[in-house]
Length: 291
Image (cartoon, rainbow, N blue to C red):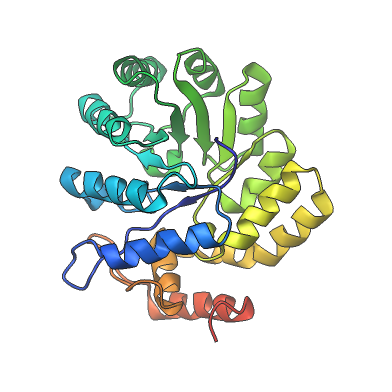
């Protein structure tokens, strides 16, 4: 299940800041029509940090119902409060999610012992739901070490990790220690990570280019690296362009330019600076995503 291109789905808002479920449906349909292998709502790209728990639950439920079993739905249910993470993950299981994505606890910065206790507690209290760890030190202020990940891979239910630490060496170390399924959390490193054993990506770029990202993953999985490299280099400008300001500011601007959703964020995120948007716009035009 944890393979190929899974989209880190953006959460669209109306101008009044409410979740725009009409646009949300369009985004889900756009993914399904273009070959995405899985959908991940309510992660960092989905602005989970500024969703209330009720909104987060409503978004997860909506995506599960809209997808209707056509691809796996991996619900973002992480928190730096273990009790909250257990509650959200249990809810995701009850309404039919295929798995859960759980970010490393942020701000309180637990030690490896705390990380082990956090994830083990969730796995033990929410049984029979595949769990994906999420290592993103740029967001959390702490890095999960390969030895910690290897130890967690022994816990029943913990089967995968989204690696967004920006290091192919990290992936190599993890896979030298255990057989956990690794997925890239950095679009620009998907192909290099797959070359050493990762199985795909949880992708920001797939929000706007779902077909090509999925095709690149399929080519790499088939070890057709010539085809995968071609797609990688074609998309490299957008991989980089979507991070010229804090994610998801650029991807929401891109979705708006493509007519898929309004460019509305929740504070403290704000729209892109005009000069940064101009850079992004040039990339979108070069890739024929907008005219």
